[in-house]
Length: 463
Image (cartoon, rainbow, N blue to C red; front, top):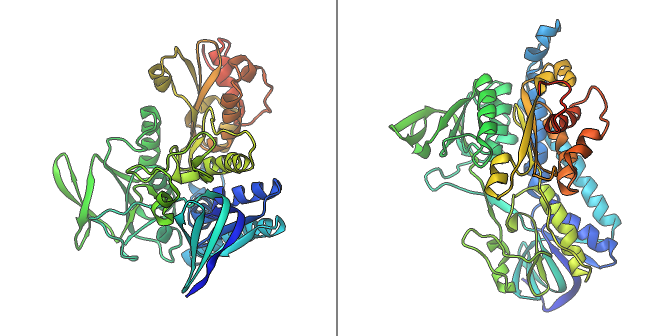
């Protein structure tokens, strides 16, 4: 049924209620716009409902279950067991609390939220499908934040039982005895570590020759060692080609290999949802990979803006949130541009990985003359007290002594991302970082220690 042939006028339309979409709606409302947000599934999007948040909650569950192995040398004996049905309830409760919080923020800001699937029919009009009904909206400005969806492999069609995606793995009621993950990126590493600690026999299959493709090879090697330590099998330079009665079939340099599995998780990446919203009808330019071409202020065409996973750059929630403010400002005729010096990348594996800005190799490729100092966490008092002192923190500077990158591998290094990003974004110097008094004993000191080393006056490491 079509609800009216005449479109309802709206002021600022936001399509997609994930981290980028709801942040854009809230910022637009703060700037005095009348905002309508359309979301076809649940406010919070993939990240909050089936991605970032439940995965990190599961990782914490796995950490708690594996605590006994870490604290036994301290003289503490801990015995744990896992009830996956209760774990699922816990994950759902965490998600529910946060999504309810976002809904309250939107309501308090006066944002009108519509449940439905929006598609452009022309640059200033969208059709919103609510079940069997269709409503037309005409907007002054639109911000599109429809995110992305998992890439599916033709040779491994999901069946919801044996071959599944990350969502089904996160909210499972049963722990797989033998789990094979296809994809050695950050999702594969995080889920692999979590399920290995929960008790599954885990194997990760990756088509490239290193785990975490795209990251520095040194980081890949450190993560590789951590996975091996957990008993995770690595099948690198192999490609999944199908299944048989025993599990997954892969092909590598030496031919075909069978990997036993009672569950296969396909986590090879994500594809932008530009097609689901028909952004081409708004006049936007879409690449063959589905990315939307945007200007610095996130403008895709006319009065239509695109943010988040739809646009070039890392598909990360915090990038989408930052772009949301830029797009809302631009829609309100305020000067705005998205031009970060670095977007932090974090992998919540064991060890964790944190990267922002340029590493030494990338800096050289960019024509710079970088210097770097690598501080070992074995020299960190805080890492020692945590009983997790493997890893490094590296600070990279250009020839003028400006911090252009930070890389860290080790337990809890994700918490260094904020200070590292601030240093890169504000063009702090090595002396700025080295001269800032850090509390002792904290992991944050490792950034200061690396900067002191780079300045030629290390304290807890040899020069």
